[in-house]
Amino acid sequence: MKKFTSAGEIIDFAIQLEQDAVNFYKDLAKNSDGPEMSQVFEQFAREEMAHKSRLTEVSEREMYEMEAEVVENMQVSDYLVSIRPSHGMSYNDALVLAIKMEQAAFRLYMDLADKAPDEEMKQLFLSLALEESRHKLRFELEYNKSKTGEEE
Image 1 (cartoon, rainbow, N blue to C red):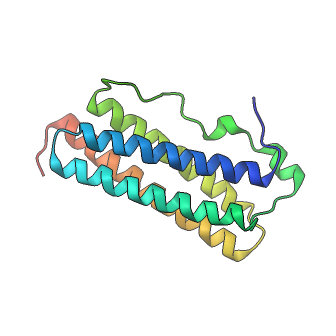
Image 2: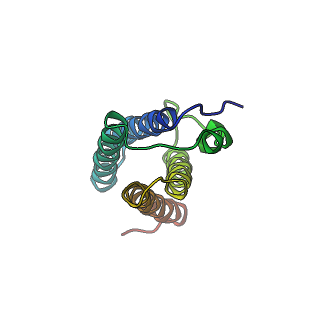
């Protein structure tokens, strides 16, 4: 299992997760059946891009530090999703993947908040975690709606 070796590596990992989410949601928006979910996916892509921007600022300004011992205990696999997007993925499978991606991001940001060196960083990661939990809930609601055939 790959372990992180520095706080910068953790932030870079989070930035890449956000970029992966942007790409995923843009792809879902293009392939969405209805305009409402296409708009939702586009909005989430914009929000994930904003997350990436906030994390990039943290990285560029080297605002996040961790003790080496704490870094060593964090493992990349704790924040990865085993399912990968694939061409032709069903809508429900895409929603399940989105739920898992948001859950992994939530866990990462909660762990980073817990290990934050100061209140400013803690609040940043808590706000990112909250946004990811909102995304997860939205996808869970959409998944349940699609499984029961409900209309809005």
